[in-house]
Image 1 (tube, rainbow, N blue to C red):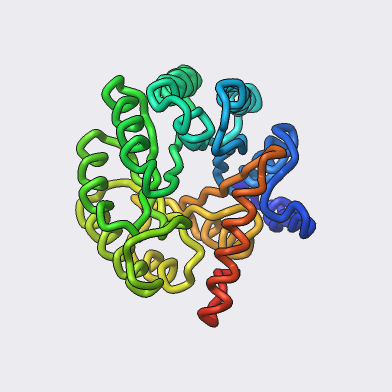
Image 2: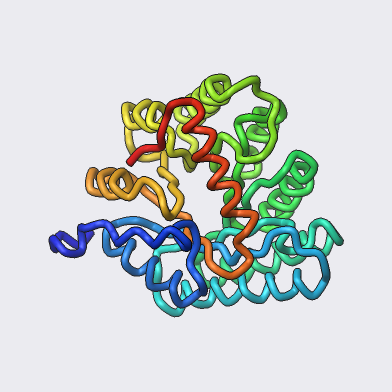
Length: 278
């Protein structure tokens, strides 16, 4: 990590209109390069969920492939994130799986990871199956699992058996848990099981209680995952302490659904009298 004082400062917070996303791949590369200099890995996401046509799915595939190429060409410490609906899962789940296999193959050839985001309840099985298909071909992949769902403990055991790296998140979509405290407890239970077994995983949360709980555990198997637009102080502090830290960097024009979830997340915290880590 660069010890230069200027390099250690957190990057400027984007303006309100673009707090959550960046306009294009070039901006995402610049953001990633700056965060890498601070010891923070990046996860690039070419926004485009809920593709409604084969053309849209094909364009999303091409933009994700371009992100993989850019990561390799610029030597970035970064991976690609992708949603199955961006690849056309709402139109043709088999074709979307094949597109994911192609992306994972291209990424592996460049030594780059692929991380599959989880979406709504009706897409969980499709998403898990697609990740398992990649793993069966020896293609490294990370899969997000939502602790708000009753099925997640079984899904977690399944993907660990296939050497798929989990990313635990509380869940931005509808779940089964009765409330946020139950979701937090489910998160702790699943994370504790992974820690006890020494299974590497990512913890995607801005929850101060969960982060404090995780920090008390030995470093080494946990990567702390944060969104762009939140937790800049915490990202830098954890990275400075030698913790593995990643920032999710979405880019592109199709940001409406993503931004709506982020704003709903903050509104939910405010209603609970809470706030994300600074």
